[in-house]
Image (cartoon, rainbow, N blue to C red; front, side, top):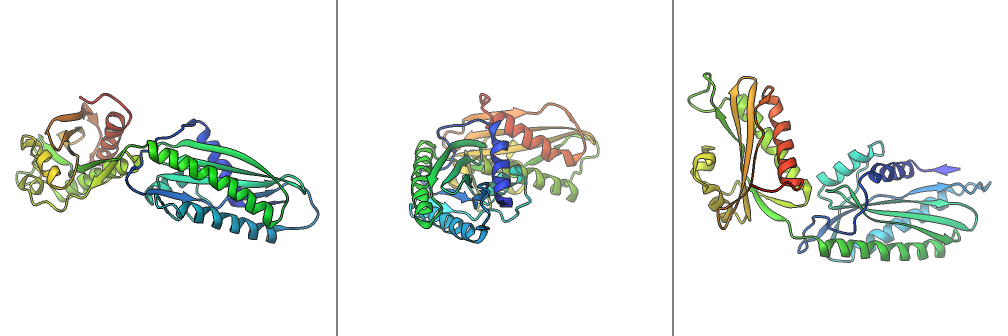
Length: 321
């Protein structure tokens, strides 16, 4: 009996996603832009018990099957193919994270199982990478184990997968262009550096900003705008928190729909608070804000606190203030 390692990983990923439930659409991917799609190599299971080793023939047909599926998806200009992770030891969660880091909005995975000489099954799953939701899942049966049977199975599976992709991308809203400015430090301790922040503080703030930008980019709800194109004084001096909402105008010039500024307030060497605020770039109105309240921990915990705050108050549906 032949079982591919990728097949085992495909089943593990399906089990991992069961707890998240299914959905019909809404990948959070842009409707007017191409949808990033990663198609993993399907696994193959031969449980027919046939005495002849057909591993080579099965692998050849599986490779042709995958090539045809990728070709069918790529032929539609609404999608761009993103290569899957090559680490076959990665856990399901790690594979989803790798897909997100590579820019994929959707992950397609599956497996083929040969039950007997004449009967095979193909399982396909389409997954919303950002939301970790199953958008489409189907099991197909097909008779035969020859090129014609495999080609016929790919045709049916490909048609349904592409229909699921089209439905999800059509229903998804365009992402919000968001200028995420560098987090700032408001140091109220007696030991505050009068001339600015220390190198250590600067490194920690850069880590905080990176973590928040990564979280928002992976959500699919936001398209993070590059801020290096501005020479605004408040951006260079990191005083956006005191500029009376000037971040909105700066973000608008950068082509962003909204702006986000964040502040770490150091109360003592082991106590801090984190806050963020999002404004509409055109009106300057505050659309969301949140504050962590007093937290304990050294500077290395800033990133964790900021990411959690943004996730809970901006991404998980809590009402904006």
